[in-house]
Length: 113
Image (cartoon, rainbow, N blue to C red; front, side):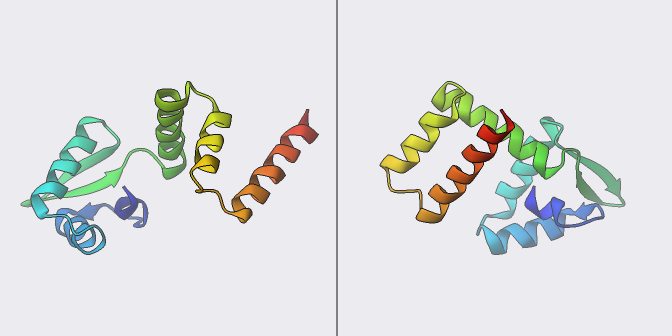
């Protein structure tokens, strides 16, 4: 999805493949499988351009992140953010900067109430 979001025009298959082979070290067949799965989920669209396909996102990055993060919260933490933060805290994945940012966000929420 990142490859498609970075470009303003529809992206041909070979550009997607080249980008992901370099970034992810994925094989072409894996990338084409991923594109087909994204098409079936209707989060990207493909248009025929001669013998190739051009891909473009149907969903914007912000909406995708919201959907994926909500799904993660629902599946792993019963839809609650606090257990997620506690999990990362217990496993040393929160930096001092992360904690400061969380405190700032909580203060903003408190101020809004």
